[in-house]
Image (cartoon, rainbow, N blue to C red; front, side):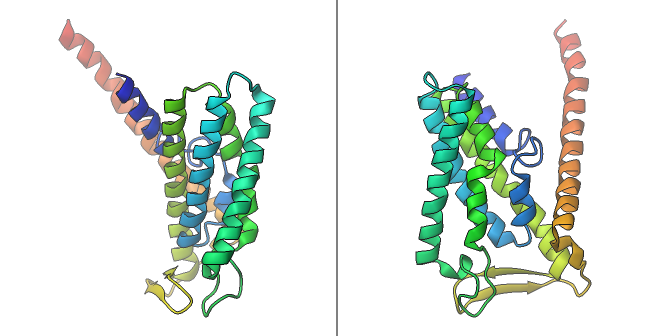
Length: 229
């Protein structure tokens, strides 16, 4: 039962309690970075690492942390990790980090990464981890982090496709994967307003699936009880 509970905690973070689509956390990042799938995946990966570190630390020191101190610890850890991420990307992968580097347009500008240190997705999850044991905090962080990546990537897929008519993935300064899908485009979808619209549409579709799933589950419960009788 314990292993199953940990697994359900992991799945909840990915789908039923997805940080972006269900809990509406990290919406600033969802709007700013989802103009490109590659940028969304990279920034989501940074959030995943930050979530794991923050939740584990908050869980380990939960006896000494109140609500306010948990926010402080989460902010300090996420800010430190964000600085490290900026330095590493700038030094070893500048093509996706710094504007104007290489022959292609940049994918992830380092000015976006500091938003990770103040995003509600990290701060709220850090506070929540003070109520969880180490194992559940780890699985919650992994599930929520993966769910965050998937949500950003899905929103970015539609925004990039509708906004540019193509999908692009930059490998290095000289290589880039490029798929042209259509000539018809909606440029406004790449603006912040378009980001809010697309995030709302994807979140609404996600909510409708969750409601349908819960409805089927509730309809099946009386039949099971009747069968047992």
